[in-house]
Amino acid sequence: MSTPVPQAPEPAPDRDAAVPAWVSRYQPGVPAEIELPTESLFDLLARSVAEAGSSPALTFFGRTTTYADVGAQVLRAAEGLRRLGVRPGDRVVIMLPNCPQHVVAFYAAMRIGAIVVEHNPLSTPSELAALFADHGATVAIAWDVAVPKLPAALLKHTVAVNLLDEFPLTMRLALRLPIKKLKETRAGLTAPTTGTLPWQHLLSAPAINPDVPRPAVSDVATIQYTSGTTGKPKGAILTHFNLYSNALQGAAWMKDAEYRKETFYAVLPMFHAFGMTLYLTYGIFKQANLVLFPKFDVDMVLKAVKKNPPTVYCAVPPIYRRTAEAAKERGISLRSAKFCISGAMALTDDIVELWESVSGGLLVEGYGMTESSPVALGNPFWPTRRTGTIGVPFPSTHMKVTDPEDPTREVAQGEPGELQIKGPQVFQGYWNNPEETEATLLPGGWLRTGDIVTVDEDGYTTIVDRAKEIIITGGFNVSPSEVEGVIRRVPGIDDVAVVGHRRPDGGEVVVAVVEASDFDEGEVREYCRSELSAYKIPRRVIRSDGELPRSMLGKVLRRQVREQLPDDLA
Image (cartoon, rainbow, N blue to C red; front, side, top):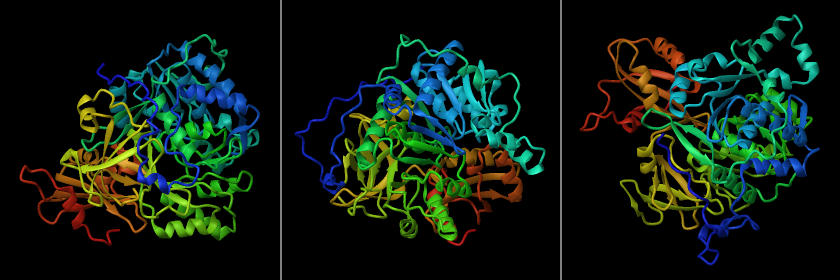
């Protein structure tokens, strides 16, 4: 199998080297460099279990699991996976919403040196079939509702997870009552499966023998898929070193967060790179209480605030807006929320002002990508933050801005160019894709981001364009090529360009512009629904006024298509 060889951890930085100008903008006490990890992610968990055993680790619909309980379940589930034949380097798919079983499954796989592959449980069968053909996993741990979408022919074992198993007893009993609304709620949370093993099967195993080798810090921890402009998702290879480093960078940046005293609201999905690092690695590292939400629901969030007020609330801009507006309307205090980072899409001044009017700290914007584990830049939790920028490089992270046509040539300070980043969190390459690896990961460990930025003299960075044309909607990446490939299969469609249309709140919606003599927008969207996840489906499908703009080589020019869309497009 053609995969990049994981690199050894980088040596400690030269502390006598010149300190970059942007370090002067850091919050006082934040170091320019972090101490690089020498242990695996399982060792991270083991330390937290040893130090915070009786402290709450996970809260799910009001039911709390301690760190000691999490640690014990991880050791049993690890042995359960081993008895299914999982060995170091094998891929194990986790396809779950945020729930206690997700956390346990993640670290159980880590314990035996398996490679976790996170998938969205709302993915379609065709999306999953393509991904499984790429990574070759033969064991999946999946939400029972999503099990029918898995490519059963490629799997040796499927472990089905019933979310209700982790609900408080009173809620489980209530959901069994013969009341129509409760029965509908239960049907949305769990479903019967055939040919699967129950999650309890893994937990019924004894604790794994401590003599079973643990993974090394340089071993591959996850393959995290990210959309590409070619339409084929690419699996970013992240090692224990990469992910642990990013957790330590986050701890340095959020320097005032205290061990065993923070409450993280897990409103972002843990199958997404942002949520994975925030909760599964950094949150566990800080020995925090993770309040888990299977999906973002503002009523559910504000109900939880009354019993477990959040201190760390990281989200995307639309979630901040909806949470703040609802809290104001209902008179619910969010003053406990001290550490708030926005990512994945542009953060606007009005959302910052709204959130900071109800919360207890600054709302700052950061920047990252799956290939950087994911966080690489951020605004300081300090008056030096600059709203409208993505901030400055994290500790132990360096950046440069280069000519997009010649990535070896740096542009003058203040001129737009492609952002490149380098640091211990930068990935090892793409799974089974040496060509894309070579194009993205340059000599010396520099990562081409594909984002066009300008940088001021203090290092504050502003995104001005995206070279890769990825659409970011609701915090998720959408490949235009992938959606175009589906729409081209609709009868009557001659050609199509899929672009992102900017909304007033800074986000984007997916819009398809088609060349067609006759088509039905509803039929196109319905066909997309059968092939694509909901967030990839075009919000609008409109007919092009004439032929789509093309280059001399015949390639559709998406940027021109995007620029021709009316500002008031619904």
